[in-house]
Amino acid sequence: FYQRQVKKARERYPHGHSMPEPCHFPGVKILPIPVLSNNYSYLVIDTDSGQAAVVDPSDPLAVQAAIEEEGVMLEAIFCTHKHWDHSGGNTALRQQHGSCKVYGSALDAIPELTNPLVDREKVTVGCLTFEALATPGHTVGHMVYVLDGGPFGGPPCLFSGDLLFLAGCGRLFEGSPETMLTSLDVAVSLGEDTLLWPGHEYALECLTFASLLELDNPALEQKLQWATQQRQEKRST
Image (cartoon, rainbow, N blue to C red; front, side, top):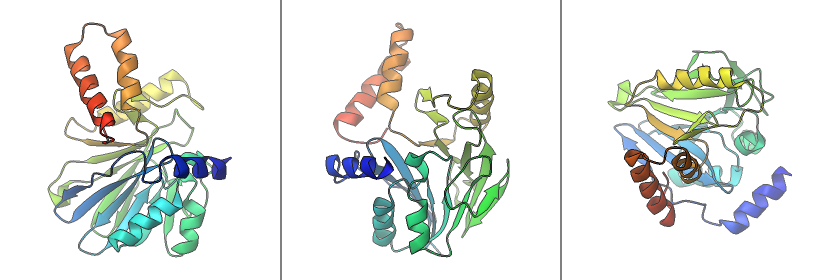
């Protein structure tokens, strides 16, 4: 199933479903990699050392192409959860990058997991420090990763997987609404300056649904118009 879905997406979106828009901070580059029909992987680079980590590498060819284009060394894979559209590229990338470590929760059956993490555990890749936060609900072992922005004078960066999207959250496969709400509170506690890097391009769908529930919300309508324009131009939200 995984191979069929990847093949279909590559044929439908030979250059990705969105135009990559990298984000730069002093010493750090975050490159979104559009994969499958609406997923995002993220290549996070310490530009001084050339060391890099990737978050949720579902399509190994797309991720490897980005690694080669950037000329970096892949040191770590951070998986938010076990689903194939987030972890499907782990095996192939580990074969190409033998010293690369795979991080994630031991509660999820993450392929090629080498370094199980617990809540609030930190991992360093070059000058980059990631903190793993347990956020069950979508799956029992779902984790998000927060890149500490302090060392490079930037905001915290939340790689949220299927916990949180723009105006929406992930489906409840292995948790209760109460569990998901507690996990969402973890994300909210990070502060308003946190940059959100979600696992899917779901903003338009989430905002459209929200607009049906809140018929008189000017801020929501404005955000929906913005997202519509972004997607018409194949730009990320």
